[in-house]
Length: 258
Image 1 (cartoon, rainbow, N blue to C red):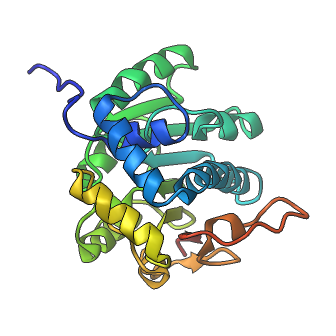
Image 2 (spheres, rainbow, N blue to C red; image 1 turned 90 degrees about the vertical axis):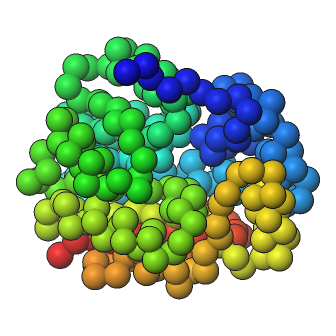
């Protein structure tokens, strides 16, 4: 069967975020929609950058303090500086990472990434996050799912239309990993009218994304033990010492499976 190719007529989350972050791996439709979002809510650029910084802090904590050596990064998007495998391996060279995405352009870049790294330590699964059972089966080629795994879902669950379905997805994923595993989530929140309007315009342009309330984001971690400071604005999750960043309209949290 021929592999799907990137569709230059349909906006992609991975490519639009690449554009907002200043990357070049995007199409005109991604730039058009990205410009509309930025025009409506200029703070989205800072939010995108803060989410990348959050990833570094999450992975650093998970490796250095929680002792995790396996990562499942779902909705990974296009490669950027300080990706999960780079941060993890700086601290623990034996760390294993599986990236998951459904965008064909991400798959193409992932192949180049895999070819350049140590064999057997990084893998890519081309799969929709709404198929958690299939996703876990494929991830098991590289990860030992009888040992703790950190599941990372940054900026992903807002792409799932129905919140109850998003909760089902996170439940299925955490049910598929053992005690001692972690789940990290982050997404945009409906806490600012300007951001709500920007997302409405993006939806109208063909890029469906659904803001959640902080309580809805916290629901993804139900049944798990939250890591302090709990579910908070993205810049407030374990900021660098001495930093006092302002709150933003995106929330995140990390929790451990008991």
